[in-house]
Image: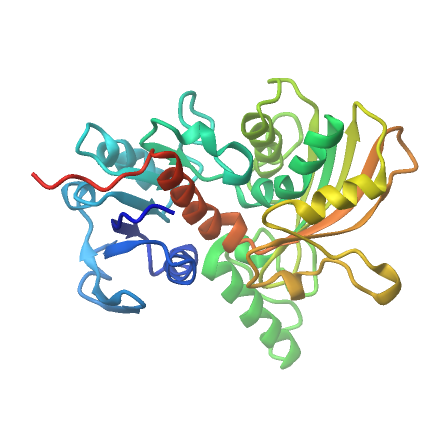
Length: 349
């Protein structure tokens, strides 16, 4: 990476994703000259301990954020829609990497998984981070697409409570305790559509007119954009919330243009950056949320030829929703932008 150092800002650093962005910056030794954390009136003035020193949370303002070289937004889409473009506009604006869905489908704004399409960030100031489910799945699909040529994809997801942030994880843990203690027969639910402890919920985000949920359609829309596929490229997903705290799992059936070879597929996954092949069923080795939690790499296993379709592979994927599905991907985008020259430190006036 470049020897330059950067003035880095984070909005939403006290939330689940924001905390992980700080952690990724620390662990990956991103060249931070100064870390600024912006928050609401409620959090302004609080101190956060980081590898870069003790940081006092500042009250957010667009002018303050624009002073940074790069700003990570770990906030909701409404906040991003209101402020992101104002932060990055003009030659003196900051590069903005937005973790919300606000700009993912807007033409001209890159939707980036760096291992796939880092070049899309060249010359850009506003970058969208993908949905967690898409980012995790495509880490495994992309090497196989390059090898065999993806034709269709069907995905079923098993998504952790962390997809709803810290409140979702808290609801799962508190609800589980309330049932196990005998306090309640069925847990309360405020975050999820139904109680999540001891249950699975085939409903994430709002239902659409076509019968899919928006979460499921995000996989379709984002796979097409990130991989440079046709607007009508066939991708189907069923998204299910399960009672695990962290790390999403996905069962993927991928149909290809070329005949598939499992040995070649395994080799491509072994060599793919950001992927850890865990595929030794005889010794009970396969991807699981338990082992994927807290890990940067996406686990891939249960790799086999699908027996229902020609030229098809089936496999299972697990990845940490808060890392590859959010914070890690955002920091990796910044790293890629340093490498390709899209992110540079501002020259002092």
